[in-house]
Amino acid sequence: MLMRNPKSKNLGGTAELTGFVPVLTIHGGEAVFLFAPAKEREDLTMKQALEQIRQTADQLIAAAENERAVDELRVRFLGKKGEVTGILKQMGKLSAEERPVIGALANQVREDIDAHIRTRMKELADEAMAKRLENEVIDVTLPGTQPVQGGIHPFHLVLSELKDIFLGMGFDVVGGPEVELDHYNFEMLNMPKSHPARDTQDTFYITENILLRTQTSPLQIRTMEKHKAPIRIIAPGRVYRSDEVDATHSPIFHQIEGLVVDKGITFSDLKGTLELFIQKLYGPETRVRFRPHHFPYTEPSAEMDMSCFKCGGKGCPLCKGEGWIEILGCGMVHPKVLENCGIDPEEYSGYAFGMGLERIAMMRYGIDDMRLLYENDLRFLKQFN
Ligand code: DAH
Image 1 (cartoon, rainbow, N blue to C red):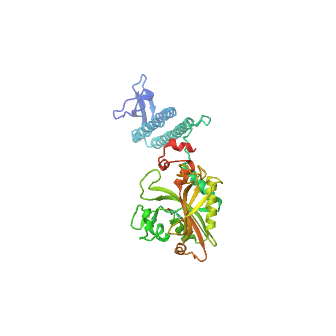
Image 2 (image 1 turned 90 degrees about the horizontal axis):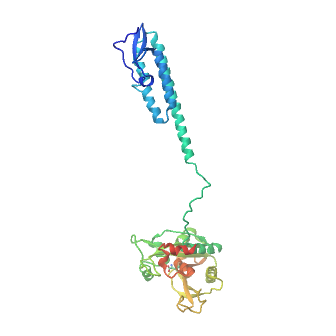
């Protein structure tokens, strides 16, 4: 007959597994668990209790359905107040011979449960990953959603046409800063501070000597300074002037500059190149004419007109009855400008031209209001693609 030890301790926990509350007691020098309440009181040695814990833990861990449940089991069996720990705390009550044996077994059980928990955790993580991969599988046979397709802006359509034409004639395309030094935008182009030609090119000044460029002509200077001769470039870009917005003006617009410098370049090179360019853009029947003009950085200077592409030169509302449409400014690079850039005007000569891109795009597509080019109205833009 076993007696309850008055100092015995209720270990808790196992009751819900077995239906019994284990109570540790010492019997004949051997640690014994009494389980109560019990129909027939059952005795378990500490060794048996550990085995029982291991078995229960194994079953529960294997059945745990998610990582959280496994974690709860870890606390329940291995935690500070866990079942294995509970047993280890009772070790003091064992005999000296039994202590190392039971101690080793308890440690082994703890390690085994710990190992089982780790494997189960990994299994569950792998399962969860597999499930996710399965759910996230992409069915490549499903019809896709059609993306909204953009189109190229008419302005860029014209620009790439122009680039193609000039690239085909051996020109390079260069770019430069829109925030420019007065030095490049005016001074080096023979337009000192007092020059009246500056009046028509009022702009936005950042400081007295830094401004938003009014023309692409500073690219002539920048290119000559850097590369010397020979040069054959075009330079498209955005330019700024303090203009009010209307059907033909905008404070921000675009130009394309051209510059050729080499030995023996003459006005006939200029004429031939620009005539070919216009005919490629508007058709081989297009004629050009040159009117004398003045630009401070070319000498002689001219403005080029082309025969009206609408009436062929007879005169119509588009060309205001003239038969001609003004298209660009040009001329032979002023010797002073070449000199400014360290190119000897005795050895080299060159020609330059500059035109407004908006104007070209508007004529190319019959657009009668420049504002349409900037407003991004899809009804307008869709007509070009
Ligand atoms: N820069 C001039 C303007 O903005 C256009 C121009 C005229 C450029 C003659 C040139 C040129 O290179 O030679 O009105």
